[in-house]
Image (cartoon, rainbow, N blue to C red; front, side, top):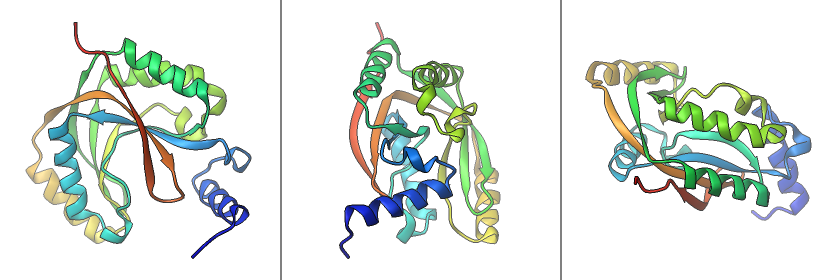
Length: 194
């Protein structure tokens, strides 16, 4: 199926509106920023997501979102590059499993992540959606868009098997929102430890 630019813009506007994003911003809010994790942790969460996410809806990799909508702007790139050069890789604690109603996510905690999010929120303040202005609640979704019963069963299983662990944040990944799937744009690696 082929769409005109106007049809795509209208579809994107409806999607953004559904998620509480101002439709007047839909032409500039085209990027998503996620945390880049160490390869072993990424593979762990990705395997869980592939196992438990409905395959027809699993269009993006497992991820921890920092910002859901950032403008396609050279200033954003400059800020992300500068912040990544200042930041050292840091640990996050995986502290539990939580219900999303029709899905399940792992909860993570890190003072360094909260501080990073707060620092990035300042230069991006005028562009942030209501969702992105809130205090970050770090999580990685491994199941969504299933029945409540299916989600509850997985939640119980994952809670019974849960053991706290640590993951490493190595940088930030910028993605282009493509109306469903995401397209990788680039990584902003954190500075190597001195």
